[in-house]
Length: 141
Image (tube, rainbow, N blue to C red):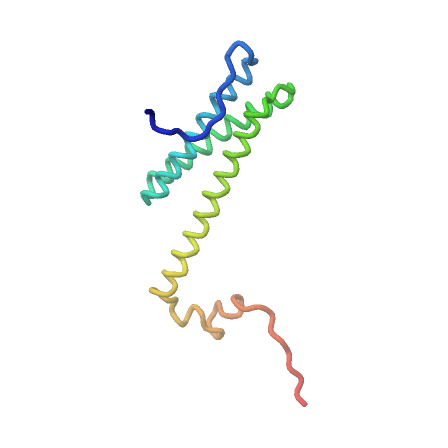
């Protein structure tokens, strides 16, 4: 028995596809690979690898978007490719949200472990008035 693979639509035969759609299939496969690579590097928590993988994903997405627009203008976009592209976009969005949550958590933990000096957060410091919102005037009665 073979190991189960991730569900992926079967690629149509080369002879039935226009060259643009075939190129888009290749680009979309590269985007899917870049998304998986970024996910793995995020789990590994290697900042250099994450930066490299995110740059690679950005570059492959830019290339795929150009091809996607070209094929869409010709009206030859197969539904399976459109669905795969939407799924890839959803995965990128999920990774971005997870990264934002992780960054926020790190910032909160740093704030707890290393609080800002009182002089920076004091209302009477040089930057104090700019850090707080407009005040409320209370009428004396």
